[in-house]
Length: 221
Image: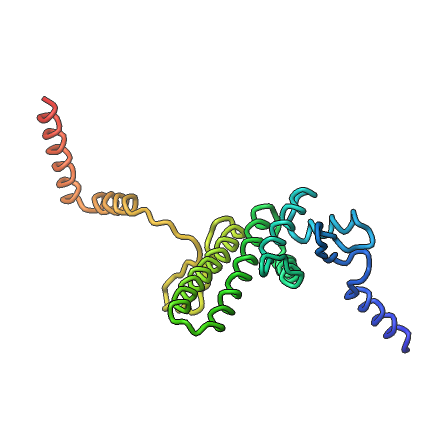
């Protein structure tokens, strides 16, 4: 009776184990190069490229090089910042080149935002506080715009609409979705329907059309 339970635990451990060959590789900084740490270097590149949304080796190393530069503190790349930025990109999971570039910008803006927050907390100078506060606000707005841009890209350019409360009275109808109103067509159809049921209105409309036609001919003459 205990054997199935042991087998289940083993299967569950195998699923969550990230130390095997299929585990997402890590990136390590050296003085003059970037190393992808994985038992199989080629497999490690493929796994990391898939995780970061890079289409080929050149795109992968280009994104990594840009992230290394954006991670710098004191004009030197920072291993902790780089690991954090790559981890965030993996969690967002870009699906194409546009998402890969946008997500790389997002994590870079976030790191810069937190640097500004640190400087703001460490200064007592009023002018520096005001300058850093303005920069912090701009960075925060940029990050929010990037999140919205990513969402719209993933939704094919459409904004997501969330309906929280919806009440419909007896006999009423509700439409949830994209609704395009064509006022001129609706008014024209309504006028035609009304004229068809009202002889006096029909005669008035015809008289008006004749007057408009005569005026047009007089103007052209």
